[in-house]
Length: 248
Image (cartoon, rainbow, N blue to C red; front, side, top):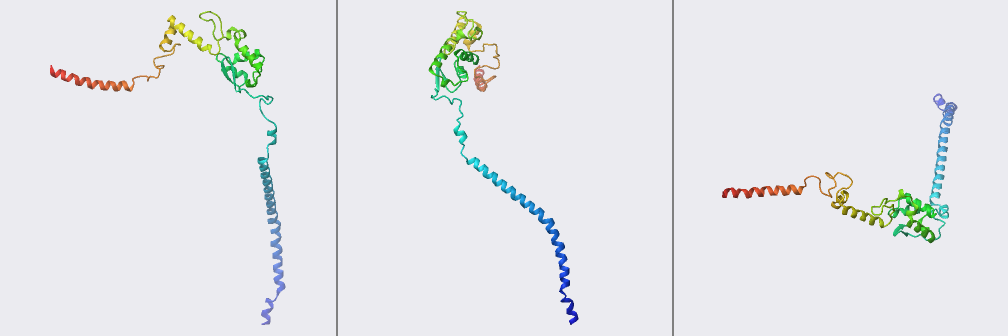
């Protein structure tokens, strides 16, 4: 019995076998696995901190008061303390006071962009200035230049050259444009000229085709109403002819 128990109680051999196993297995685990894992964890923690910092910065930007925009007013007419005139009346025409002088004058009939620029330069006004902020003296100057437009622009810019009655070159603006147009049409109708007759009949004047278009809303070709009326007349005529033949 003593001989059998001896190998079981030999503890130093077991320690000798276990010691090298621990040294061999634990050492490479620490060297290989711990270093990359720790590096990855550190990178993740750094990214998280950076993302949190960016989020905080964004939140601060969104919720922060915009003091710079409030302090610096961005307006084209910041130097004007007076109230704007929403409607400016020149040459019996209501002009939009929010527009520039150059483009506001084009609201007058007979005044194009080119004529408006000439009027602005003659009156000594800035064409880009808002017309609603002009002073009374400036508006009076602009009104006088518009009234004397025939003496300012050359003859080739006028809209009524070689007048039929007087033979002079004129430039008509405002309500006079419609009146002069009606006068010219009446003269042509009284003369019984080709254009006057075409105007009188409501037909095309300048050589356009009138066979397929320009029929004042009528349908081109045969209408359905005409076809329906033709079908109704056909059987009615046939019925009337039968009794006449029987009576004969």
